Image (cartoon, rainbow, N blue to C red; front, side, top):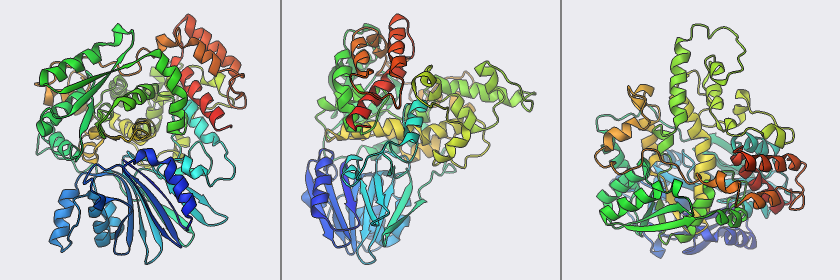
Length: 594
């Protein structure tokens, strides 16, 4: 985990201001490179080869590298480079990247496997290259001033705001947030500040820039010569490399426990486990209890972290400040409380296991619906059913199937709350989809899961994890979202995913059944007690924030309807996650004065 900032001109004061904002991402070293046509600043979190010889920006011949992330296959690449005559002065992955680029140019980015957002500047031709990993684990943003031909980039949004004269709210981002509880558009909540998309390359030269898709998934790369557990072990073990202590976010569920078992093989019990428990909530305590039992059984360090309703109230503002945009996912609170209590620099998370290995019940429903669509003899006819499941039987494309089961179904009252609300439809996805833009036909579960990997995964799970933990100088690694794991298992035949008896995570359970005996049957997740707290402990907090006295956001949301919604939920469970969505948005609007 590091912070990188740069632009295509010289300004020492500006780069120091930008680097000060990203300093929490890399507290171990701060480095700079200046020239008339390029300035870069780097905040380093030292994990591989912590020696100062690997500090960045890193220079080799005419190239200047600033790199955030980890390259998991760097040892293999290094051996090949040595065979071609290259020598190395460090043991870092940083030096491997820059020398591979020296040898192969932009093709080098297709050969590195890991989590990364990086910049390379060629001093001979005054050209800047920016690229992001194909899954989107590491964030990278840019702003282009077309008047003065100035191009800025950063790991965070706020360093770019320094150079924008007037902040403007991006209504498309608000539209996405009201539909999906996140922003799936390329442009952030701030107009003219954009994400570099997963797998995207940006080249900057002579005051202009161009974007191109460079790194794609290769789903023809299935490898079933080895067992599922062998494939997982091979790829996970590369992710476990670290020259500093590591930890695991452990629950009672399958995914984090598979990582736990693989960590035991790699490191013995020389790693710490952290698990969340909810204050005063026995109903949702099974996860934590199982995690503790497993840790104790294997003699691994175990840290119990308590999260209470008060944490939601106290942390909501801080989380918006850290994430830099509204974050409607209540898991962000547990992420934040965990981040304050972890002493290790590297944290492994089970995130991605559900998305790659069918952990959600909705995936089972999609699979069943897709089977019924195939045998629906009337699917060519135009029936107008009110029943949602009957409507689904007449869907004829993966986009509509994805939308039918998307987070659009989470909220009941968005149309009453959000001014000018409209549902995002399949054609609107042209401006959203990245890897799956050209996904045609394939009316099956795998296609919908691929859409989730293209939207929900980078724009909620990974964004939230990266920013919240990086704020405390912690790098989060997500082994289940390894590019090789995705390529092997995401597009696997739907029947193989579930087996004959429609079993979630069928492949994982079969492969690890001997060591998963203690896990819970149904993991409840971080956010389980929230809805109840909102009816009691958090009722006043919600009422105060979603009020004109807190901030008049009536240009965007109907605050009167917000109050009705809060009261309705207090009387009977109703739309609690829309309420949190609105709380986070209201805090964001006030913070940035929109």
